[in-house]
Image 1 (cartoon, rainbow, N blue to C red):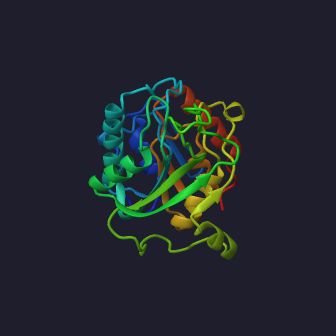
Image 2: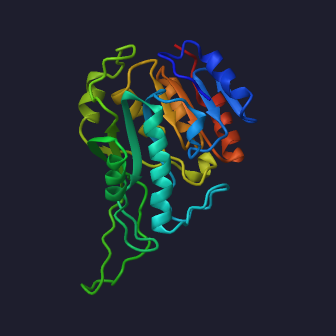
Length: 276
């Protein structure tokens, strides 16, 4: 079990806490990557993380190696409830939570995914702060037109995703290094809640659902101090951990699939910069 700390200056001792538990464990620069499941409530002590940045499975039948992405909607919301509840317990009282989820979906039936998960998170204790609209310039969410050029049954599908921003108990951060590294222009641009940048290439990364480095990069610089601890319960190809390290934050990531764990490990080695 990862134990509670005020900083990660004692990162080596924290890493040691996992070595007897997890067969696959990777500790590199400011990143800790663990081959484990976000549904396992007992692997962390309470109130560890300053910021969560993650993009969970969307339940649109993506062919992951170790996760069924074609659940009933009720099963999907139950899965979502469990991992979001765990994250709430693992986050500090001034912690933030940047959740990248779909606005809606029409594969398997029209569902208000973004609204439903936003309500669910608040029922679990998270407080709502704001929603960022991510306009993905190169990705379309359309799977059908509905009734073509007819009012009979047209589908309206927006090619955007959400980044919903929650916090645990207090929005104003008074703990941590209190050092922000965001520039004036970045702050002005990113506090405009419409972000436009392209998604990431599955082929280039080698993962079925990667998100671009720009997404965690912005969230980390806008919502955390330097040396804060950033967490991604669905580490995937390791993008959040790379962004955290390259912005002088510590990070912890969980990845249930051993193949994606190895992919993330290699990307962290190849794409993290020297420590500050």
